[in-house]
Length: 391
Image (tube, rainbow, N blue to C red; front, side, top):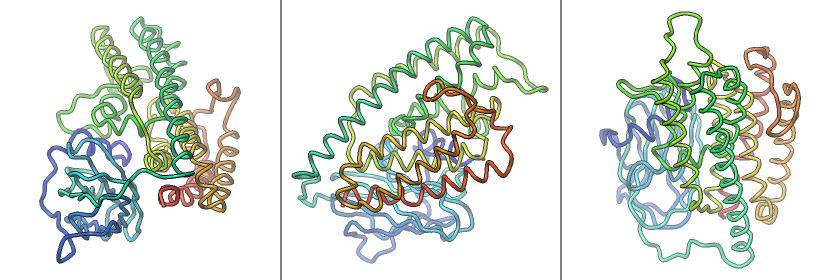
């Protein structure tokens, strides 16, 4: 199983069926103060408390098992992702920082990033604290929210327009033209992917890879069409016109739904910052391995889209970050520039939405490692962004 899409299958298509077995708290009175620890093993997801007061919650997640794991804080419907940390290797600890209002939530670990996972109920009590920033910080957060909302809506609108053209080409059998548009249309999706994930139901329908399908799950979306446009040399039966129409119409319908939902989506500093971190996790666990676009090898376009989205999220928060930790801001800026410089080495022509990248299977092992090292270098300071801007 592949980590990134497997995580989504867990969060969005299987989470309603997660077992409570193995979910325990690790404190005598089961109450927290906003700073919690999580121990993830192959059989348990030990959270140091089953409740905490509303406000900033900090989960220090340690992988005490022998398989890579993930941790989620989910909404009461067990679909909405409030926050997540992915790709936690054995022995490592990663932090998840979120702002949570009073209510019912669920904590969830997914050891091995396969199967049903382990989850338990988590209660956020009313501390009486005002969760909204005040004074100068409030103005900076409000402006970041306004700017990021505009960005997400714009990308969703462009995605909708490009997808409309793409599916019409595909349904008409104009495969060469559809292949030429595939990666450029998806660029808009990759830039705002965490927003789609937060809705719960759309991401697995639109972006699930074949390797991450669960038994009996219907495969729809971009990658189903990708395989049909770049079919394997043997063992594959191309879709009929009726099947093409069904898959294409479903993708367009889901895209329109996504566009509509983004029009009423609002953000907070922690959501924007966690979105930036999530996008770099996407790169580290999917794009840089070359397994995201296994048929088309257009991974560098997705790579660029994730980097674009993370950079915009950070830039929207920069005024607040500079005020709180100018040194961290400089570090993030330096690492973004270095990563973009490496990506530009593999750009054949054009720039921005018109950029043309090499086929990912043409990169050498050394070039892939170079990109991976740059992603890891950026991820380290970026992982501190949420805690800093919400402090």
